[in-house]
Image (cartoon, rainbow, N blue to C red; front, side, top):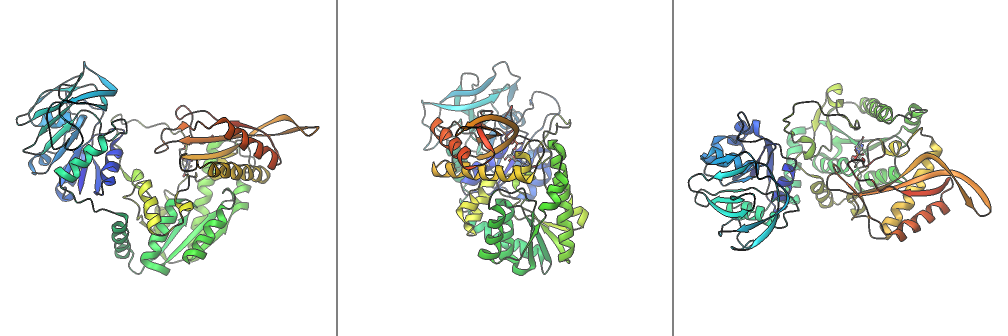
Length: 512
Ligand code: XMP
């Protein structure tokens, strides 16, 4: 396994994903915990991430010296290169030659890092993002690639198996980057590449059994992929000791609640309590039109309802959650200041302490695409596993302004038609998330010989990798025209459809 030491780059998680795509297990630790974790971790190789600091300044982060004394291969990326060079006795100077974005490098020497990927004397495209640069190499190193702004764009000490690059191999803008990382973890470090979802499933089941023993576990289902995969995995481990609770807030999409119930009860035969709490939720939301009040009302009610159900079931010592690795990785903050709350996300944080339960989180080490792979491994239907993300507060935040049952019904019908057209056009898997928003605006139209005065519906579709940034999806106009016509013809209450062409930032994906 590989240890990735995080110096606070925005893209450290991508390094972890690229390594795991090679079938090699890895974990990310913040630099300030690395001293403690490195000796225990048993790393066969180490990767030092990029980061925003400058090694030329006092008090900036360093890798544990033990990493360089342990006789394991080390790969430094960007800031990781600079700190490696500085710690091993080379020189780094604060930036006059900034390079940001696309750049070209020229390979000036063969290296194990480039084997089978890059040839000596040729130029290749990479992605750079640095101000400082290396000016003098530590003993034993030589330059293996140069760029205009960085005479030491890639360096190597082949004898000690230390490698470092100024560019970012983990991002897609370095087209050959994944293959360079493969060379590092598979050829240089010598990892087997046998970390698969089938292996993970077996290990996870053993760990759940060891943690839970004969105890009872409650798992909240949201209708989404993560909680479903967690529940099916736990059920495979401990069978009837698991009870699932599905709090139906009445804000799900068309047919969604039934699907969850039939999948769990019918297909998997997992004990499931289906709580129809739509009256409670819609009652509490009556007259609420502020997005943050909506989110907080739903979040709080969810906890209340869930807690009451758990008490009825009784005797459960464990609460299962579909927490993913991106939620677990501690982000390294240099500013230390509080970040602004854009939206308060609805989750069940705080519930375990309040209920005095221990957490079972079998997906804590996994990224989203790995959870999907595990879901397939566990036999969840493809249509379920490949689903677009859906927010906890559901349709409440896709109905700006006050919410009524009538508006939710209109939105559900329109959303179902929109998704149907997307599937028919073969676009569902190309788009990261698509949905309809029922606007609190009415417009005048003419249908047949009559005047209409009905709701406006906005369609949204984005591409994204992680939901942090997103681009609107550039549909063909014929697709939009066809979909709008169908919605207006088939859904009573909508007489106009518009398409949202805002990216994130400056927009967010959801409207509220
Ligand atoms: P925004 O709208 O912030 O959304 O660009 C980013 C991603 O997060 C989803 N989202 C939520 N998910 N609880 C969730 O579980 C929430 O309260 C919530 N709000 C937004 C959104 O659908 C998108 O995928």
